Length: 129
Image (tube, rainbow, N blue to C red; front, side, top):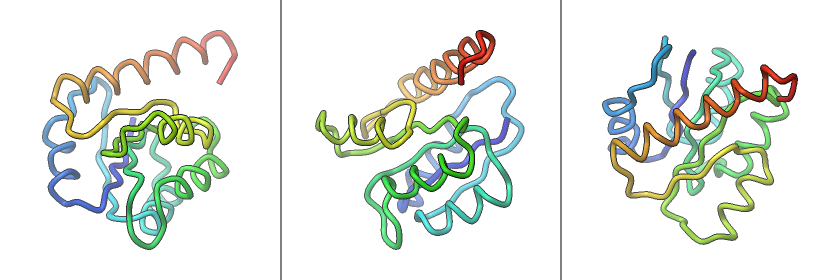
C-alpha cells in the first residue's frame, strides 16, 4: 500500500513520515499543496492519503473532492488544526474517511490510520466500498 502525505508544513510531512507504522506500507509520497497532491496522486495512485485542509494553491477540501473523483475508493484521513465539528463534517462529506486533529501523537496517528484501513478492508470484504 502506498501513502501520500499532503501538508504545506515540511515539519508535519516529515513527522508523519517518521512516525507512521502501518503494516503493508510499501511507499511514502508527499506533496506541499493540493495542486501538487493531485498531480502525485494521479501519477502514483496511492491507496491512503493524509490531508491538511489549509494550504496554498488548492485547499484540502477541493483536493479531497478531486482525489475522490479520480478514485472513489481512496482512503483519506484529514489531519488538521481546524478542530471544529463543522470542519470535520465538511471533510467527511467531501469524501474523507476520517479526521485527526493537530497536534497529534504517534499513537493517535497510527491508531487513526489502522482503523481507517481495517474499516475499509472489512467493508470491501462485504462488497461495500
